[in-house]
Length: 155
Image (cartoon, rainbow, N blue to C red):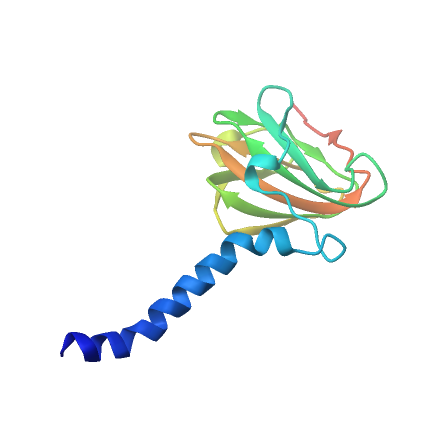
């Protein structure tokens, strides 16, 4: 294949990619704020909790009635104790491995791993405990507030 025929063949695709990339760099500035809002990863405000996890509110407020969406980051070697919530919660594991257990007896050795990409429903008023073992994990949690947590451990 001659250089001229190669240019004829690949130049349109190369120009197309270059145009796409140049538009991609200005696309964020051209978004209509009345149509959507967004937060880049470095703009998400993480708040440390009790030393074992951090959270970031994305939509709503879990402490108030209504829809909420937040991120939960479990730090390694931290798990919650048996508890329940009043309403269903819908959880997607975004990264790492999340370990979950059910029942009123706290037994971290019986927890089951949920790898990144897994979707879990915590049913309202059902006892569970969860957290991270050897690695950090990040969850997206969606539910209806208020998202109270009621201890349910039987020793």
